[in-house]
Image (spheres, rainbow, N blue to C red):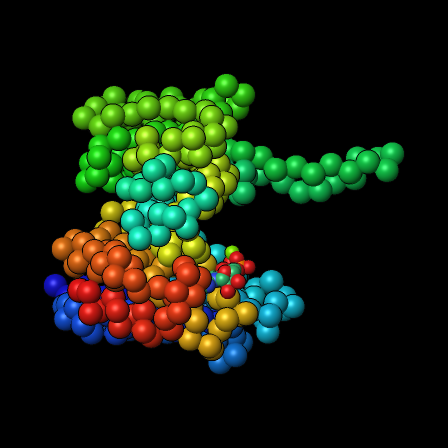
Length: 351
Ligand code: ATP
Ligand code: MG
């Protein structure tokens, strides 16, 4: 059956980088039905809302959603539910995407732009699986309260249930089977009850269903150190929302530019995934043809792999990006002079 992809170009450089994905889809000649809708500031200008009910429904009934980026100074001062970012949080929660996949992969041609020496990062290929909808960012009680005597208290609560831990750990084990078959789970089980539960649940699931995958555990602070000491020791890393936020950003800097980094958010098998470049709408370079389209193109490759059943096409797209870079094609952010469109053309030519 023909799979469907909903494109949400969004704001700033979003439409520019998604434009290159559209050209690539044309060149790949795949059996995919592509639709498009307004999102973020562009949707606010047209409808008053960052995302309409109709767009949410279309997203939930498609096989994959690929976003550009949302936001910009024009919409920053609005009430919260009229801000582009509120539309993104609504979309994530309605799609039920609880596992955030962030690859930290180093392309050979860019190994010298890493913050580490080439020998440490060449061939690096880590996949972070970060829990996205639970933990301390969402736990209750939360708030700031007056406690008398001029003192105030700020409270956040780290809460995880066994099922929340198991479902994201399952995603990590499943993904590891298609890679080097190794999972490292990061927590702070030495000082946090939620971390202890995390370790116990991951261990139990591993024993019951994924004994063929190699599982190791690491304290999150040690992992922060190991990522800059010897990053190539890792394959799949599974961790909670807070540690995943920090550690995946740290790992991102091992691979070079923001313009190269894709991401995915996925939920239950068979439900649509939400794919997006890590970067924002980059108002400072929007409309100038300077944006690097690689992060959006690599996010599309993740959609092909994880939601659209097109593994071979995903491999082709990733190899084409690698080949174009090796051939010297580079936008300004990665040390070259190509425009967004010229970079897209180089990748299509490398297919
Ligand atoms: P947001 O809050 O939307 O995430 P941000 O403040 O993190 O935004 P970005 O929009 O990601 O910022 O941009 C950060 C910097 O990186 C800017 O200088 C921007 O021009 C640059 N940048 C971001 N994405 C790209 C890209 N695809 N190509 C080239 N430069 C980029
Ligand atoms: Mg940002």
